[in-house]
Each structure stands twice: as C-alpha cells, then as structure tokens.
Length: 199
Figure 1 (cartoon, rainbow, N blue to C red):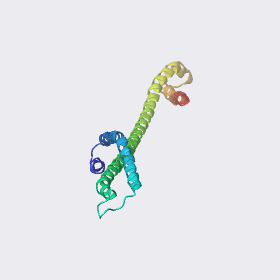
Figure 2 (figure 1 turned 45 degrees about the vertical axis):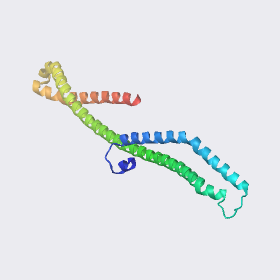
Figure 3 (figure 1 turned 135 degrees about the horizontal axis):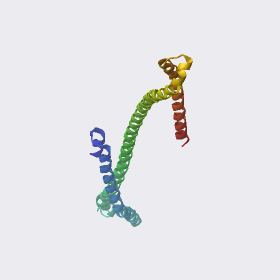
Figure 4 (figure 1 turned 180 degrees about the horizontal axis):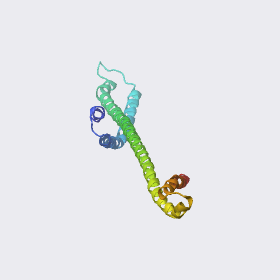
C-alpha cells in the first residue's frame, strides 16, 4: 500500500516516509524477536536429519520408513519456517529500499525548493541593487541641490566683481558641485562595499 502511495498518490513524501519508517521499525522488531527461534529451528532440523541418517534404516515388510514419515510430516513444517524467514528478510530489504528511494525523492524535492529559494533571493537582491542605485541617484540630486545653494550664497559677492548675474553664477557652479557630490558618494559606496567584502 505504501509503495502504491509513493507511485500514484499525491500525499506528501514526509508523511509517507514516516509511515514507511514505522513499518520498517515493526519489521526490524519482528525480525529481532524471531531471529533466535528461526535459527534454533534450523539447527534442530539439521540435527534431526543427521540422526535419521545415522539410523540407516531399511524397509520392513513394505512398511513406511521413519525417513518417509518425517519427509511427509517434518519437512513441510521446516520449509514453512524457512519460507517465513525468507519472507521476513525480503520484506525488511524491500522496506529499506523503499525508504532509501523515498528519502532520495524528499532530498531531490528539497534541493529543488532550495534552488527556487536561491533564485528568488537572487531576484530580490537584483531589485534591491536597482533600488539602491535609484536612491543614490536621487541622493546625488538632493545633496547637489543644497550644495549648489550653499556654494552660490558663498560666491554671490564675487558675481558682481566678475560681471555675472546671480543666476549665471549659480548655473556655473552646478556642474562641478554635482560632479563632486557624485564622486564623493561613489567613493563612500566603494568603501562600504570593500568593507563588506573584506568581512
């Protein structure tokens, strides 16, 4: 039933694995409980067979020999014991193989889930990186705006001496200030990323 569930059912592999482990545990317990008796039965059979051979009996007046009697009564019982022992061993081996197969399926499924998770994290990291670049661009604009205002206020007294209007002086200061802010932010980011890589 469990093997059929593994093949055709949509039940979670973890549940099937737990059920299979319970069956394997029961089989191992049964095997441990019967191992001594089955071994003792095999030894008893060998002893009985040896003792019958030692008798060297001959047929008397067409009557059934003791060897024939044992072949009809004793040997089928011994074959039943051997069959039960082999069946128990086969079931234990089958349960072990099924458990290995199911564990492999669970590991493959988890590997696929981990791969999907890593890909999702990679996509998120890419989105965060793009967002960071966008924020840095906005930061350059905002910082440059305030920096241009401050530099312009400092240079306004020189605008009259140079024969320039305040607007023209402000326009001239914009490119170098924006460039300086952009280089400064880039250097800060390089230091931060270098520190993270070093860690």
